[in-house]
Amino acid sequence: MERGAPPQRLSGGVRLALAFGALVCAGLSAGSAADRLSAGDPALAAHVPTLFASEALRTLGAQALADGKAVDAAGIGTRAIRNAPTDPQSTALFGAGKLAIGNRVLADRAFRIAGELGWRVPITQGYWMGQALSEGKYDVAALRLDALLRQQPALLRQRQLTDPMERNPAGQAAMVARMRFNPVWLAYYAGDVESMPADVGLQRAAVLDLAGQRGLILGCKRIAPIASRLATVNQAAAGVALWKQHCPAAGQGLVSDGQLTTLDIAAKPTVFSWELIGNSELALSILPDGNGTGKRLLIDGEADVPRSILAQHFVASPGQYLLTWRTGNPQEQASDRILAAVTCPGGIPDWASATLNHATGLWQAPITIGAQCPLHRLVFAAASHSGQVWLEQVALNPAPH
Image 1: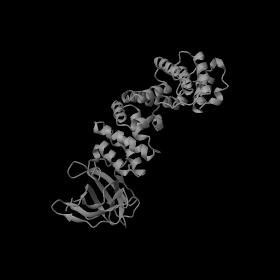
Image 2: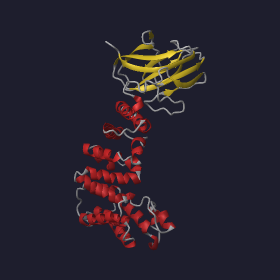
Image 3: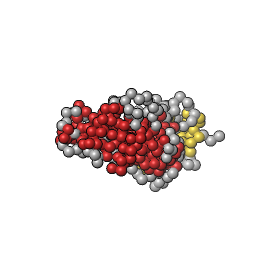
Image 4: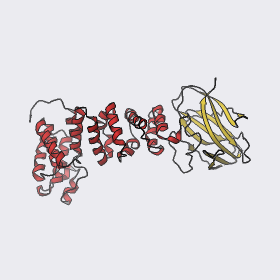
């Protein structure tokens, strides 16, 4: 089918191949300075002399595909083959052009040749990934996707590339199988999430949940960005689930890392980790706790009013809870100079009324959690004129009946 032929329904291979036509010239080398400069710049490419036009032709062809000018793309692909017949990018561009005008037989032949010449061309990988998807071969599609992402991890932002895999259980499993090789794009998958929409975040969360179930644990640092992003797009439950699954130190309690093992003065806090809150009146330092299993936060100073020192966001269903912690003075005697409250993020703390359980040595406070916010914030503060006091062993549990 050439010029003027009626449109046909596009298969997965067609859609993916054409979607990545604009990437055909990314990261390529060329034979002249002008040719190299033309990469990605169609205006400049149009003025490159034919003798040095290999890169320029691919740039123009990619632009034609991106603009929907199928016939132009096919013609430029033919010129690219004449200019560089053994270059896999030229053959891929030719195939994409033929595909765009509906000549699928010739396009398939071109992509087969392009594959034999070299698999590092995005448009070729996109075509064969689409073919694999249309045949239900998700393991093969994942292999093609892996090849694309190893070259350009930023392609994870292209939903037409990732959605078919993330929305299908077989696709999810195939992606996890590739993740087990720890490819460079895995860090981007959980980390390049600054503007990620909520639905994409939930799709990735499903894949990463499956990875965790199969023993692939990313660790606190790598899982923190996507867990935090989910919380900011009103998907806090999904975020905290990922956090506790992939950050072993978080534990499985409502409060993450109740033993304060990850507490670090220099660390940048994430949504579900402990946040140290400094001020000019109090000095904070970290020591081993009394049991030798975690850490102790030491507070030293004389503030005129209660000053927040430590906080953490968490998720909990509405209900009655019991918050417990251990605190004392330099003589290891229990001290009442630590205050605690649970609020909605940004709320003003209403310090809970706490009592000392002499049998356990823990302070305990009844906490009522309502449904007014899906994400809650636990805050500890040093009372006014507290002097030197320490805090350790925090837990939040449903209140006993």
